[in-house]
Image 1 (spheres, rainbow, N blue to C red):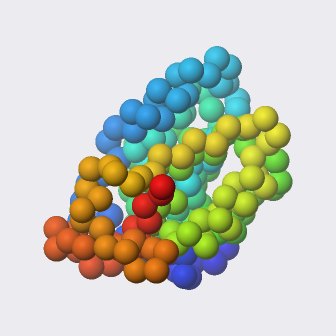
Image 2: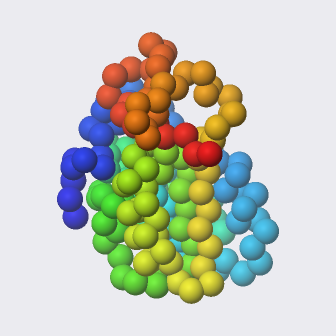
Length: 180
């Protein structure tokens, strides 16, 4: 597993150290999985798991939970929370550009605002990796920022990438790609 390469922006470690995230699951993931009938023992991978906001919910749904993130800081927070609650998830620090899982391994892959932080070229590679690890008939859920959404005026375009054009967010945040 490659760490801190072109895919991972170490500025995120500073953000995870400073801001407390991870208390509640994302409502869009709750809605998506609530429509699925039999989740017990299905395998789910969350890309960019961060501090683990979605982990408790995924475990409650009786899924076998896996997560990957580039930030060791975020993963330490997530693992500490899981230990405190006596919950189990398989978390790794790694590069979503090269997922360290077997082909056709997951029933679900979840991206909750992770892909947007990658260039278009890298996102295409990541989508190929998602397709590789997702079982035939599996589900991929992606929540990302899109054109004409709130906050689009904070973005400046440079070639095919977008970057935050705001002093509200600190340096080190990295890519911010808007999806059409």
